[in-house]
Image (cartoon, rainbow, N blue to C red):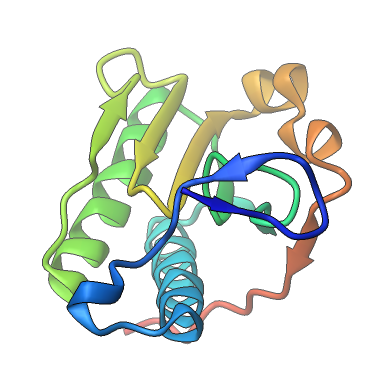
Length: 146
């Protein structure tokens, strides 16, 4: 655990210095992972994709990626696309996956990035962007269709 210098909260260290990674590289890696997650959501027409950098305000994770699907099937398809994109790019599976069967709010936890894929009604109800309103919004521009 590392102590954040500007707060009294503790957050897990993102890197193993024994593995030889610098902290800056871990931050860059989590940023790239967040963009890969966002692109995976966009590949299945996820709407209103938002990337929030929550590392400065939370010990939970570095980034949230939030997207909307317009049916249970689309929410599951977006989640599957995110998983496929991350697995192809980083050879990683989520640490935890929740809500896939129901398909109204799917959470994919990759440790340093957590993806939330909502139906529109659930996204409006839980309003994570407002709850984490003090977090930095990261610009995301979808790549052209492959």
